[in-house]
Amino acid sequence: MRRLHILFVDSDPHIHDKIKQALGGEFTVQCAGSIAEAKQRLSVSQPDIVISEVVVGEESGLDLCRYVRGNPLLRHLPIMLLTSMATLHDKVEGFQAGTDDYVVKPFDTYHLVARIKLLARIKRLERRTTV
Image 1 (cartoon, one colour):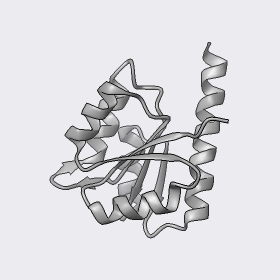
Image 2 (tube, one colour):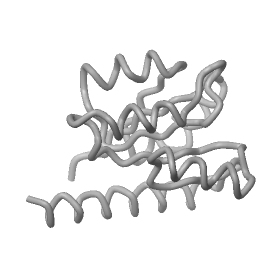
Image 3 (spheres, rainbow, N blue to C red):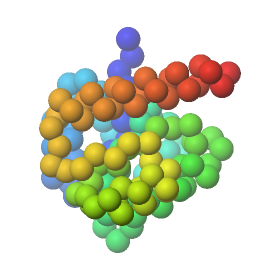
Image 4 (tube, helix red, strand yellow):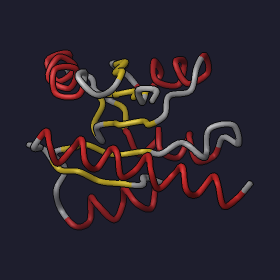
């Protein structure tokens, strides 16, 4: 079976290393340090899943969610927000922006891997029923 390709978006390079270490055994992980870089990568190749922090430097992962949902070529992509923004208001705002899942840091690697696999399975089933 093909490894899922994840585009991970966060402005902190230390988190890039942590995510690659946590997920690299099961998934192919590509990192972007800004929303602009993420959009550029999405224009070149589509990952299976986008995972983004809400606060990406001076930019917002919520804007990335809106961008993906507003683009007909990308709107099917599963999006997960992996963030330290933990209030109920933050979560609701994330779902309103178009995220499919919302995981709060700090995260447990096994839980995160399970959520990613679940998200991929749900999106795969959605595509089957819409074709």
